[in-house]
Amino acid sequence: MDKPLIVVDLWKSFNEKTVLKGINIELRRNEFYGLLGPNGAGKTTLLRIIVGVLKPTKGKVIVNGIDLSRNPIEAKKLIGYVPQENILSPYLTGLENLLYYAGLQGIPRSDAKKRARELLEFFGLEEYANVKVAKYSGGMKKKLSIAAGIIHDPPLLILDEPTTGLDPASRRNLWDLLSRLNREGKTIIMATHYTEEAEKLCHRVAIINDGVLVVEGNPLELKKKYGPPNIIELYLSSSMEELTPRLSRYSIGKVVQVDEKVLVPVEDYRSILPKIIEEVVGLGLGIRRIEIREPTLEDVFIKLTGRRLE
Image (cartoon, rainbow, N blue to C red; front, side, top):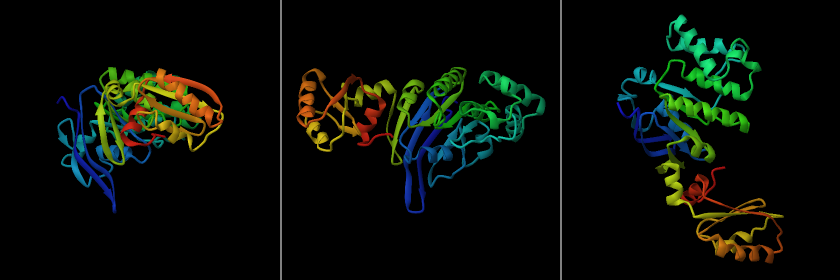
């Protein structure tokens, strides 16, 4: 089966609120696929339906050719799921946690110990195998959670905001490990609201907003197609509401102002920048720093949805 996951016309409503609206996704084997969107976009609901925790209002999920609704037990055996919330027992050691999850998957004890040791080594946790998880750092807990999610060696790994709350060093370390898992054969679908994470890890990204899959594609292709040629970033001495409409006349997209930082998408910064500086100075604002950069997936998201990710 060349497509480990197919999502067909998926809808989900809670009471009167529809949170997923006709989602269609097809994952390729060994692909790293990102669901990029802000909190409340529907990413977690979508993942919970894919793993069988929630039932869709309409639509279907097919895992490696198996219809989840018709054969949930067989389909779930093919999935490793790591939710946002902590799934570990703080009172058990790292090894004991893995053996517990191996038991839930019906793995024989001797095989479970071998698999757990391999995973502890892979994630750099072998020295902490007999340390209680209560003493683990946030990054260590997340790595052990992923190890628990793949203790049964499933072909499909599903991650919900895997690096939220981690410091930059721990986040990058986890990126390296996830990339390695993908290179070694795991198909991965990950929900995130970090554009850098999606650009770094994902072969394809689906931008989701208000339960709708807005666009899907390779990060570079999306930036080239939907992103402006340049972004002018202004770091000012103070903020002013009337600045945004003033700068919009020079912009080819939505001007975003967050406190003292202003983002202005432009076609040609060389001709536009002097006019923008004149507008800012004319309003009596000081300029602390100016940066010119290429677009990111955040800029694509703003262009397509009119809102920021965070």
